[in-house]
Length: 112
Length: 112
Image 1 (tube, rainbow over the protein chains, first blue to last red):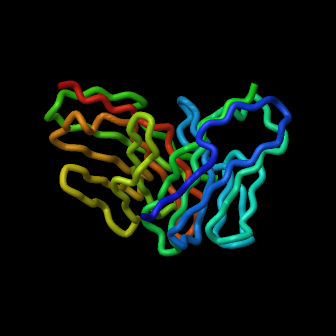
Image 2: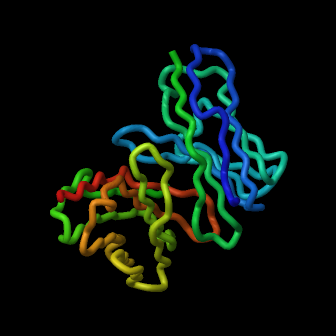
Image 3: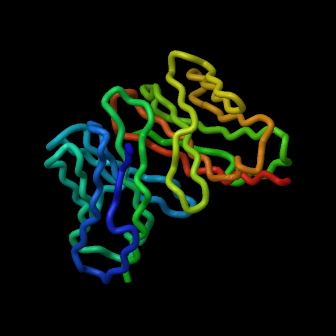
């Protein structure tokens, strides 16, 4: 089954404690992205990657890091989380020919 | 960078009536405009998209129109049904580029 998976699905953590949210896709997609969703602000792109070892900033990259060492994986790293990073995070992927962007199930992160 | 504005933020329509959601974009280089539907507690899913080489695209009860000169595009849902209740997001990008800018969303409620 074609899918994008994220882990964990829910996470409560404290300010400053480094965390990683994993994202994996099994569709051999070149493009992958991370978004955060906040009420009234819609979906905002954090980082995106157009291929292995190629990443670029989206609209809200501050406080986040990503890496793309393998085509299928695109982890999101928060090295020192802060309360303003409390949000719902989505990973997404799609193929090089464009078309539908497939979203993962989301990770709800709370930073206290 | 690209800026996408979406209106209205909430919309209630009687079942069977039509619903229209409008978006404007700022970057004249944008040429790919997808629409996503997000049901409560679920991930966004693509429902229709349009490229700038066409002015309209239909898929059963859903249609999207694009006015490149005015830099706006709209989603039209006819004969609305209860299952159309969801949040709808428009987005804009340049085809082949993964930097995607979303509107802030429209919460559509279908009144039985």
